[in-house]
Length: 190
Image (tube, rainbow, N blue to C red; front, side):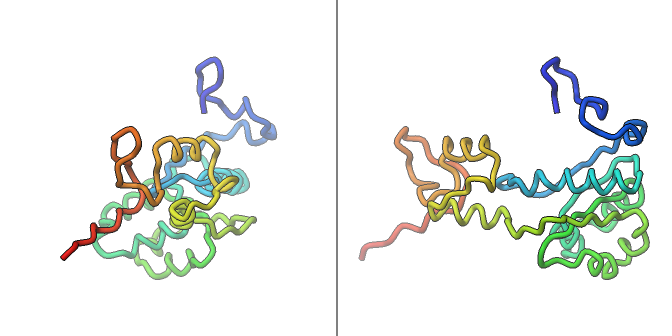
């Protein structure tokens, strides 16, 4: 986060109790499609921060939702060596998500199980089933996504005509739309 003076905001710039200001900063690296980014994607960072402040952890961690943790078990998606390096050298913070069982995912993976002490499970106190898939579907059906996405993201989606039924068809400017679902195949006339 950049401040008006162009420097990165430090813990001292935010309203944080004194006991937390002396901690070594934690860097959270998140992965996922963020397609589009939702308020719940942004919320991952808040939940992880709160969890780490309570557990006094200072390090670089991979931040993910339980849905991403589940993908560690998907064949040919992640290399075992990469999973091993992430959880052994850095660790991760996994925020729970409705319909997922992060503890079960850990127990179902020998690598995750071996390094479970370096995996922090953070509980989201406000459960929400909003997903980027739901957002894309709602947009393609012309439904409002106000309060589900940051206003700047909504404006960008509208400006670029993303995730609409018209995606892939010629726009008024003569430029093809980008993103969103593929258009239906042309019908053949016989």
